[in-house]
Image 1 (cartoon, rainbow, N blue to C red):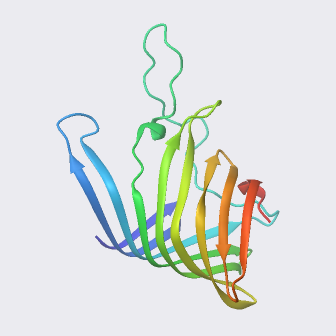
Image 2 (cartoon, helix red, strand yellow):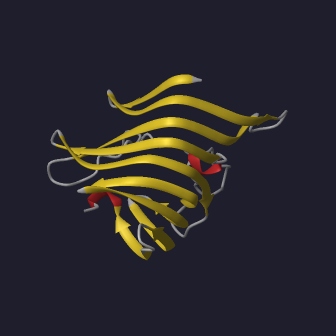
Length: 186
């Protein structure tokens, strides 16, 4: 597919020059399993409110779909947790974040692989994100090239990082771990 655009609440959040999907067909559910997503020149537009909260697209409140509950059974996990998450291969991507019309973050030339998968949690499933040889140019003052290896877990509005290694210029390496509320990330 060429020239793919995704909107949320009337605003464009993703524009991608080329998208390719590798998938399997089955005679049982799920009938189509997407194994890999290839994104060429994706441009992700993020926005931050005046009070510093990230505006993250989400289904309208109360509209989260759940699987059917068998008679006498317990409420099940959200429908999204049962969907297989493919590996995402990114080539020459860009992420731009804006606040009140000003660009506050620009990450360019993002290339590498990102693996997404659902993992069980005490309060429901979480999304695990594994970065594999991901490289990017961050623009904060002057442009700097960085590499990212490691993994994290998205749990609602919280990002939990067990271990992530950021590699930069002049043999600079930073190991990151911790928890952050992505709705209030500064």
